[in-house]
Amino acid sequence: MPEPANPQSAVEAAERMLHRGEPLLAFNAAQEALRAFPGHLRLRQLQALALARSGDAARAGALLQALVDEGHGDAETLGMLARTHKDLAQAAEAGQRSRHLEAAMRLYERAWRDAVGRGASDDALYAGINAAAAAALSGDLARAKAIAAEVRDLGRRGDAPGADASARYWREATLGEAAFILGENAAAAAHYAAAAKLAEGRAGDLGSTRRQARLLAACLPGADPSAYSALAAAPVLVFTGHMVDAPGRPNPRFPAALEPAVREALRSRIAAIRPVAAYGSAACGADLLCLELVREMGGETHVVLPFPAREFRDASVDFAGGDWGERFERSLAAADSVTVTSDHRASGSTATYEYSNLVVTGMGRLRARLLDAPLRGLAAWDPAAAGAAGGAASLVSLWEARGIATDRVDIGELRGTKSVPPATPAPAAPAPAVRHEMRAMLFADAVGYSQLAEDQIPGYITGFLGTVAQLNARTAHRFEHVETAGDGLYMVFRDAADAGRYALELNAMVAAFDRKACGLPPEFSLRIALHCGPVHCARDPITGLPIYTGPHTSRAARIEPITPPGQVYASSAFAAVAAAGGADGLQMNYVGRIPLAKGYGTLGLYHVLPAH
Image (cartoon, rainbow, N blue to C red):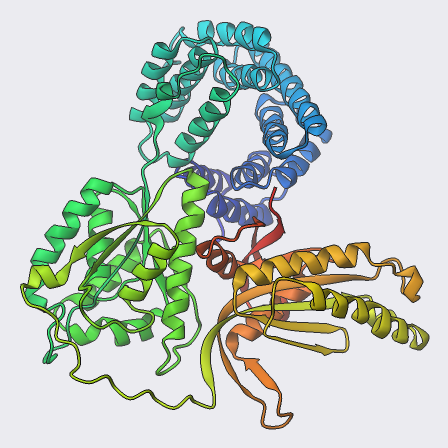
């Protein structure tokens, strides 16, 4: 990310990303800008707001409390800090819930009174309506209604001269929420509908308004959920499909002449879905058609490539001839993000494509969760044609297994001819000595090992490693391979979610481990890092033992040294693959783009925690 020319340009970039529901990108933008402009108040506020919107209320609250402790008692900072207490209340036990809600209401009311005293109507509306909501959530409906009535009266005075779309959106959303708290469902519906009309390009703001309305509906007597139906989120789309046939293909599947018909069929499906964002690859044929059509209709496009663009264009675009290469370059240049899942192409392997498909699905699912939006699939393929692993058919099967509603464009039907399967199945190839397959990897490092005295090593081996062995014997989250080397632990799993759950078990075991009984220092701890990707699986010719290695193994190893002791960090690819599979029991909070060890570049990382 290029260094911003000035703090205001960085602020505007982060705000744009938050409006459209990209809190992770907003966090990256604020984080990068703060390196150039340390201490900038608005950038620090936006960094915290991005964390809050991504679900990490605790970390956001710590950043905001630091601002308050420094003397920043403005309505914006207080309101954001109050929001983190309100978010924490939703996941807390009863006693902690009431404490967080009381803190939120106290902060919101302080910010509200301060803004009213200064005549800052926008700040007053923001803080006041949230004070009313916090009162309602804590069960003090009389207080909630009293504050909401004052907020409604203030909001009815109209927009300030020259108010921009953002101010008009929040005024209508605030008036809708005030009416909802006051039990005026018809008025709430009208204001929420007006806000929705102002919400173009503001999917993140719309999601925040909708989540708040849903929380309130659960605690307001007589609340009608249809009052906020206008706030319904546009779907997030994941797409796939066949490439255009190579010239001379003996059994046509997607002949080039069929492109106009496929385009129009896809146009009809995409126009009906109207996605806020779309995630997929960029091969010639269905992929590029989807990218062009979503962009044409005003949606975001996010491209995921299995290996670098130049190699991908050679393998999956240029063979079709025509203008596909230029369209590929235009689609990448216009995309809101381009993710390359592997640094190299592995010849003859489908694992790289399967991995990329999992990342597409997981990125779409994570974005849909952030936006509180439905996730939809779209596939343009011939269901009767033979499909390879990592192709469109396997991705549709994945979506069906994960319960993702999928729209289909049947290319065989458009072609008007049936696919002809091979007369006889090809004989199964013998298993190669080195297989390229998807795995999840865990690297852990014993913090303080290098400071241990000779007489402490037996306690490390029998005490600490012995306790890990006991965990391995009883865990339900099975691993395929484990090895140790000095202070390091390396484990391989077939399933990313299992790797994440095991990592949390291991972390909890270390936290409870009796260091003193084993003669180990009190600061002895563990760093745990997770990543997944295609690795080369074989038998080590030297040791005769299983070996799992490759560039993705190196990437996992680079995460562990920058992981804080006592925590579990994971790559963004791990988060996406785990999300594609469901990831029950895991909460993954975005940390940011962090420089990796040994000058290995930067990587988006997540802090993995037990789910609430």
